[in-house]
Each structure stands twice: as C-alpha cells, then as structure tokens.
Image (cartoon, rainbow, N blue to C red; front, side):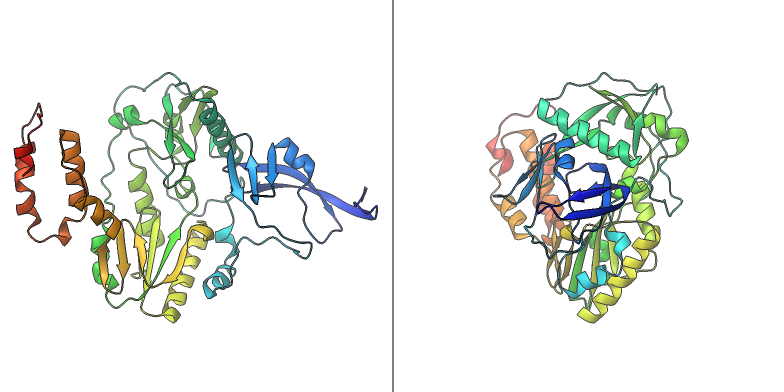
Length: 397
C-alpha cells in the first residue's frame, strides 16, 4: 500500500498494527494504525471522526463529544519525532524515564504481577435493585467509562442474581463524574475485613530529620486488584444500559480499602522512608541525593508489582507538601492554614447536622489543640441522648 502526503509525495506503508491509546479522556481507544515511512506519528481524521473527538486549537485541547471531557494538549511542530509518557527536565523525571513501565497506562493484556485478590464474603440472600435514571450528560459519561473498563477487561456483561444500582460521584477538585456502584445493601451483608488503615500521625517519628518530600499518585490503583472469581457476580451493577459485573476491585465495596492497604503494605514492606495511605504514597528523605535513591527503590518495587503512576499528578522533591489534609515539612506535621480558617470562621451551628459537621472539622486537628477534650466536653455532652434538636444559642456558648 502507498499513501500520498499533502505535497503529493508518496509514503510507503509497511504493515498495520492495532494499538490501545489512553489520551487522558477516561476511555481507551483501540485503533488499527498504518505503519509507514514517516518521522512523526499521526492520528488521522478517520480516528477523530470514529471516536467523535474534536480538536480545539485555540484552547489547545481535545474534546470528547461523547462525554464532554477534554484533555489539554501542547501544540508542537514537525520536529517532534516521538511520544514520551514523561515530560520534564528535572532529575526526578530523568529517573522516571528509566522506569517506562510504571508510567504506561494499564493495557487490556497487562499481566497481574501479584497474588492479592479481593473477597466479597456475604452472609445473606443476594441484593437486587432497579436501574436508576441518569441525566443525559451523566449517562454519556457512564457509558464511556463502562466501555473503557470492558475494553481493559475490568468489567463484563453479567447474568448475576445480584444487582447494585449505579451511582455518579463527582471527582475531587474537578467538574467530572465517576460512575461507581451503590454497594450499601451489599456492604451490609458483607463480612468485614478488620485490616487497619494507618494514620499519618503514626509516621511522625519517621519524619524526624527529613527535608525532601514527594507525593506519588497511582493510576487506577483499585483496578490492579482482581476480585475473587467466585465473588465476581456479587459486584454486578445494574445500569440503564445493562447489567455488568466487575473482575477488578471497585470503589464503594466496604472492604476495598482494607484489601488495597494490605496489598500496598506488602509492596512497600521494609521501606521506612515511605508512608502509604491506601493509594496515596509519601516519600520522605533527608537530602536530595538520598531522595533520588529512595525514589529509585520505590519505582523498582512499583515495577515489580505491576503498578503505574501518573507523573502529571505526582509532586517530586519539594521541601513542603500537602498530604492527607496536613502540611508536611522538616518541622513535622502541621494543620493546613485554610482548614484552620474554616474552623475559626465556622458559623454558629443552629442544627444538629451543623454541630456534627463542626465537631468533625475540629476533631480532625484536635491533637494540635491543648485540652481539646475539655473544650469539646459541653458540645459532646449536648449530643448525648439527644433526639429532637431545638435551636438553643445557650448550648453553643
């Protein structure tokens, strides 16, 4: 086969190859590309038309008209000869380039490099529910995400006698939505896993003498854990477009955090410079040189276990970092100033819900407040045995 360029010069084609592309649009694009004698890879108009992708040059973005999600792009020129999963010139990005496997998005044929599985042990009859209606925009997002998970092999059509409803959850710090199963009824019947999730305050002693920090963001971490084959049918989700069951661990399952914490503790065993809270990882070192060594050890572990990270969401080599609602620096762990302001400026509660919200905010940082138990005693006593809350300013003095 021979193609012609815009200037009519011939382009020799050697063969074809089917690839799966992750463009940051929350779905995988499978396409058969022509392998030709060109210096720059090209995504053609036929690809864009087939997947309803619209380039917006003025905003330097690629819009997915199926989901209304867009990814930001960088305008380049013809001298770009390759695609890199890691961009940046820091020593940390140079280190990442030595571990290309941990920066690649998950593939449909990706091998699972560990033996951890998620169990859903129940003690009652199957739970069922009817499909919930979704607004058109959220329906498009849900369909696209399910299509993506089916392509990756993480989801499949189901004939299960279980059916949990679909729920759309807003993503943190984003206008996007994440489709998840509403597993509350299933969770009520699930035997609980008591494996403990750590507290950042337990890591305080390990922070002594540290000055350099990195925050590692894992890609679709839960989806790295298979569900026990005998329990897959229990994960079934009923949607307006069919019944599907998950072969990988999903958000919303009551023991998911415990399963992943057990797994990540295995991955990071005997690495005292690393703290992991489920899929959030903090690396703390005493010097830049030591930090590079620590990151290299961590990246080696992630590669051994088949885990991936997203460089654009990671923070490398800083002296102060926000982590799990705290500021971490060589001074130790401190409250975030904006959250402290929220507590100080919290309006006087007039309902039971508002009071509980205030106590939740305060208790998050209570270890930093001298005699916190004494200060909160009147409010906690007020909550004891209360059934019908009535507005009472005296109660909040």
